[in-house]
Image 1 (tube, rainbow over the protein chains, first blue to last red):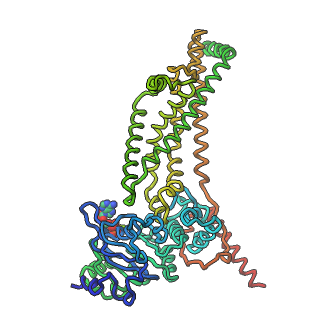
Image 2 (spheres, helix red, strand yellow; image 1 turned 90 degrees about the vertical axis):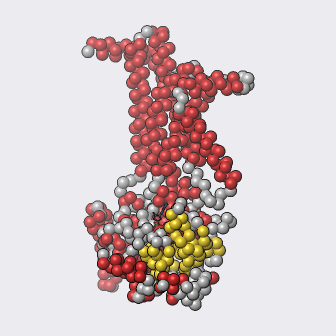
Image 3 (cartoon, helix red, strand yellow; image 1 turned 180 degrees about the vertical axis):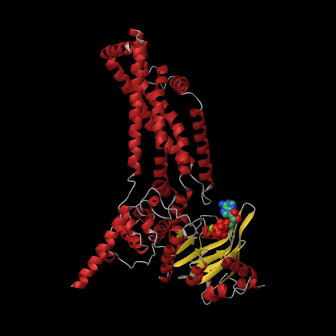
Length: 269
Length: 294
Ligand SMILES: Nc1ncnc2c1ncn2[C@@H]1O[C@H](COP(=O)(O)OP(=O)(O)OP(=O)(O)O)[C@@H](O)[C@H]1O
Ligand SMILES: [Mg+2]
């Protein structure tokens, strides 16, 4: 079966195609045999994949297939039931590992923005730098301004989140994550909660980030974006990675029947 | 009509004779209610925070057990002091402590025990309010904070508590107003608050109704002032309802700007914003044409 094809020949969980030639030891994040259950419900089953520097990995799949859970496990917002998550080869679930410290290297952008409602745009981008990274106010200010400028939100530094549109909130959330200078950024359907006319402004920012070489894992239903921007596409179905490869492989020449079905259903809409 | 005139003159004569006594009562009531509410809030904040500490997988068993025990004790505290009348609590503590300590602990003055009782009682209510305030802050914000590496302590102090306290401000006000009125039960241990003044005054003069009228006005003045003060504080905490757009000269930006199709602007903006943006754009165009002309 084509489904097995993907994992076969990559014993250490290494991707074929795009990532061949690089070994799992070079990966920034290496997910190994990751499983997650909520009670009896097994949501993720034996997930294996690597993320290398500069990779833009998009995760696609039907609703309920476990995409968000995967991202949340990678960021330890959810505790995996078994398996490992290695960050530069180190298991982040070890007792001695400081989860908060790890999270400061792996940023996350949420579907629902999750900005701090008691702080204005500028403070949203400064508070983590000051309290977590112990930067000086001045330094934090400069970084915040730099990234708010990049996402085009400088005029709004004094606004509170409730005074912004969805697209603006999401751009602030991206700036907040970037200001921590993370090594990897996780995006969980960053445009799904947005009105159609605001999707573009957020995707533009993300494409620009990708061009700058930011390492990203993006869960998305924006297939055009996945195809254009990503270096690796992961198709998830029912808690397992059904197929993965380059965008051309997955969109141009999918091997698995399930992938074909999913894409066909998606394109019909 | 005549009655009102008579009432007015009765009240005036009462006040001229006992005004100082009434004011003394008002003063004592206010101090007891404010100090008791303040300490009670502090107790409530602390207990509410402890009640919402999450346990994480990496915590040691000892920490988990201790936390659980403390939380159960706090739970009992809340139930006992919410579930019994304050008048009884006052008696219980005022006479109970000497009883249990063979009179080695006795209360010198009524102040200490009164403040103690009001604080503990208010603390029990505020613990639940605070717990509610904390869990009502959208958990997404907690995740947002965790995702940038903040610890539970940092998340609480920077994000959750400011919002929780803002949300329970009306309940703090409620508790204060209730305390202004309910501290009158402290007569049971001999504390002479505003209402106790009434009893001693009518004992001497038998002017029940005029004195009661003075009491009514006195209590209402206190509580209305308190309400007004609280509203004012809430407004201050909320900050401005609008914001300034900051004009940005693109040249001063340290790095390139991502191209963003922010098409939304026009229709979502209020007129001021739109004007500011247009002015900003206009000045930039003028800048550029000025340079080109030279
Ligand atoms: N906290 C939880 N407790 C119990 N079950 C959960 C929890 N979170 C997720 N699930 C279940 O796990 C499954 C996968 O959920 P998940 O949110 O990861 O899906 P998804 O692929 O992100 O879907 P979508 O595209 O709709 O966001 C679902 O069946 C969901 O009901
Ligand atoms: Mg999801």
